[in-house]
Length: 261
Ligand SMILES: C[S@@+](CC[C@H](N)C(=O)[O-])C[C@H]1O[C@@H](n2cnc3c(N)ncnc32)[C@H](O)[C@@H]1O
Image (cartoon, rainbow, N blue to C red; front, top):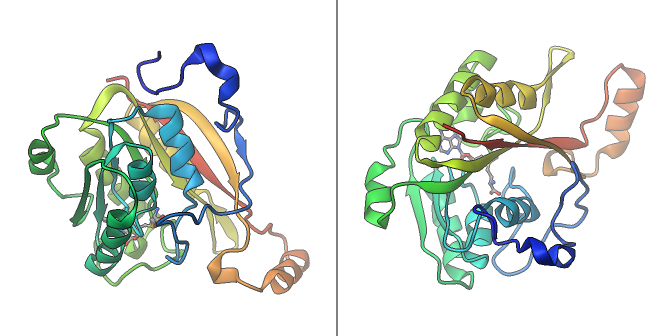
């Protein structure tokens, strides 16, 4: 048995549902149980499901510093993992908390309202009786593509790319200091266009981890279909792309890192 998941490699043929390829095509969102895709900017539950299957064991603790509608926590509860979710917006947290409570499972689920770049997580860990966590899943705003709130601490309100990188870097530091050595974390992020060029947010964020000496273990490309922001507008976007010189984003990244310090 490996030290960071529950996969029994003697029965490796039984795990055909667990991804090992770097291209993830997920066409249908898992809307079972408490999962609900109505939060603009959510990710599909299959992302945390895959990551928790590969990089956590039952009873492990996970931090999600950008909890949103609670997709990771719902999935963690379902999978018998414990989790701490942090969300800046109280209203968003309240809705997530109801859904998490409604999900079946007896794992410990903690939701905190606050700014993940500055919040002191030590009292929460102490109260939970743990010193470290075993996984951190980051799904930050893709800078300003979706404005999540008017709160100046919201990463979607950063005025410049430097400010965004700086704020996300603080969230990385403030949470991964509690990540156990030799365990993993992952960031889910897409790119954006600005001033007629691609801003490769994914790779900027990847570099923040590399600068901090995390080992890069995976660059996964995941498809996405029609986003809420572009609903029923495929035609106009294709027309614009053909008329101009750009490509329509159909993918986002999942970067996997190992903490070796
Ligand atoms: C991309 S969404 C995460 C969605 C989530 N994975 C889900 O499936 O619902 C990013 C979330 O981060 C929150 N957020 C932005 N800046 C934050 C900060 N500094 N601290 C905590 N949460 C923040 C936003 O309010 C938003 O809900």
